[in-house]
Length: 335
Image 1 (cartoon, one colour):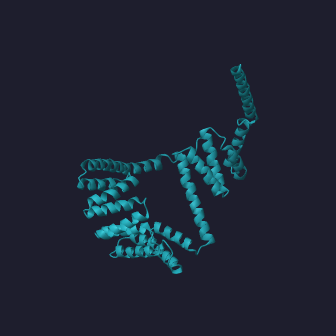
Image 2 (cartoon, one colour):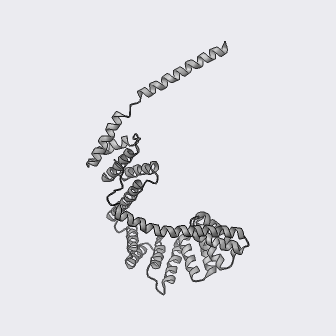
Image 3 (spheres, helix red, strand yellow):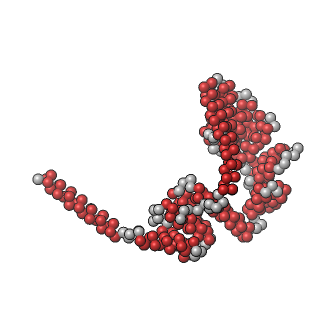
């Protein structure tokens, strides 16, 4: 009798729960007709230049849109309208969602490149407008001049920053980098070295400066000095793959093969796709009597080197095809 009563009670409860769920579903607005009309209106307004009216509709319809092609279209229109209305944060929000829902999509990646580039340009223009004489504006200008290969003009901007603030962090490092980027002169290495040393006096925790000093010392065959700089760089930044690789290479140059294994193993873990790390690790293993490990790393290095060589040939071909044959196919979602 108790079992029968429990079964009846369970049936009543299940029926009640089902009724509640059905009622809740019934109360939810149907997304089909209303949301479809809202989406269509938002898209038409956006694509006819009425972004102020379109954007609120696109914000509402974007999460509700399930059709992939339509969602791409809505997302693209929303990003462009947000940028048109100078709402950069909102544009980035839409862009993040697009990248999350359409990973590796060429259309979305292409849009991302242009939007982030546009945001960068707008920020630099605003900086130049609101604080044209600030050290940040001068540094941004100097970095742009470096990209253009206008080394002397870039150096003047960096020197002006140091005139106002002799202990401005990062500036001596950039001056050293600027020197190394120019056509080589007899004093290039020594001039750059002075700047990196000056940077470390201001910022002793600058792992990049330690690394470059290590490279300069290694190239000058000053191996013990190179080992010291690379070691400090790895201690300052545990994720600095190039510094671990430089340290391993310097230790190999000093015939300290067994000591080179640990930093080179770290370099390989941090940069598994870099054939140089595997190559030097194979050397360190080989001279330490670890024949099988050396053969394994040598095989990995060979595969990676061949892959990189193939990519070098494929990239120019792909760029040429893209430039010549696909100009009419604009990277936008299908309509």
